[in-house]
Length: 567
Ligand code: ATP
Ligand code: MG
Image (cartoon, rainbow, N blue to C red; front, side, top):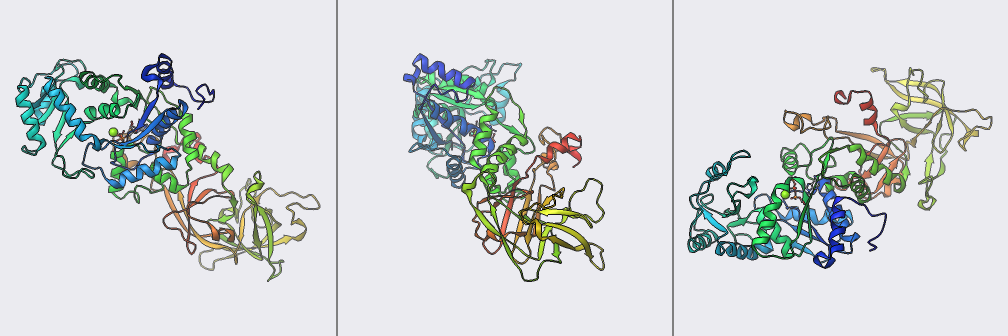
């Protein structure tokens, strides 16, 4: 890749890398990694990190590894590993043969720990968890040294071996680094390196009952893989001196460099795995791939595209300041991509029957309709037109207000791709009084969509032929939460779930060309929004469409009116 490519993004991380490359650090090599813990499905925040790490590797002609950072057996599973592999691939990135597991390094990490014990830099501590916390001190008070801090190397080696073979109970002992209990950085006050956990690991099974802590495992995993720039989120800033300490004490040179950036926070959703696990476990959503979830599998099922997500990640950029990114930005990236890629078809979500009284009973015309006004290469399909149609209920009003330009008795509108029709009368339900059928006449001279006498209509509405259309279900997804930042409030964040974030419509009718739609296909339903064929529940017999996003940002309008919370 061209390193001088001016269209490549620039940011403070790339500035650091530019300097390192210029200075010949690591022989000017650039190696990054994306290190998820397999304890949940990846979400849009992870996508930011994926795009950053793989993007940098590509830009500098380097490599990016996929590393499963699986050092805590509780909550980790193969299902999560598979979701990570699937989703990073789907985003469009390739780690070639560099798929690694931190759990493959357990033996090496254990040997590094022995080395630190031998050097007098680590010791076995028998304080309880509570005592360790108490001894640690606070931001304003120095810590207190553990009474076990000065055990002999021999004793420490013997106890550590005992920990490894399972002689001791969980919580009875830990291995700690011997650094400085008075350090102003609390992280440096003899941090824990290993703890006993008698829990089976999804890969190593019962091979280990001691597990390394993140701070110890991460820097060494990076150095084992010869990572040059270890990019992580801001909450690890205080851990950087510890990252460096382990590498320095183990005489590792050259050392990978940890660089922190601000994690993605997105409005109207939550992005911490803990919260996502809660939504799944409480059954608030239908699973990790529920289209309302901010997970990549949820977004894929909803119809978001990898290109839209990559574009979003590029636009938000990287910085050192935490912020809340507006969901509208992501939705706009999705619209932009689908605007170009999605074929346009007609579907009626809430059907109202229209009978064209002056159209012959058994006549059927076929209109040739282009799939995209700009992209002729997308071709066209035939859309049947007949005497009985369905239109959208909201395109007809019995008592229209002044600015309603669609159908009402006495008014004329254009049917998309076809004739002008004029409403003559309505049929009402004998009991409810609801309009159940609209009677119209059509003007045969307006087949082109224009009238020979140049008369104008104010609206064009979509439709399907009643006899030819197919039944379908539409799932109208909206944002998961009612407020922009559900975590900022004092109540439990689930209080702010929006009960209207999903509306299911079962009586939809779609044009017959959709009979051949496959799972995952994207469409624009004209005037309604972008929809995607559901990958779980849709079949040729029972079509199910997920609304990916509306055509316009309706939330912006609501916010303008200042009643976003009251929706
Ligand atoms: P959580 O805080 O939700 O538990 P995590 O950061 O522990 O997530 P990991 O699986 O450890 O999740 O994350 C893998 C990588 O993705 C890490 O490098 C992490 O910094 C990055 N990452 C996680 N969440 C975000 C986010 N919201 N924005 C940017 N990067 C993120
Ligand atoms: Mg983590």
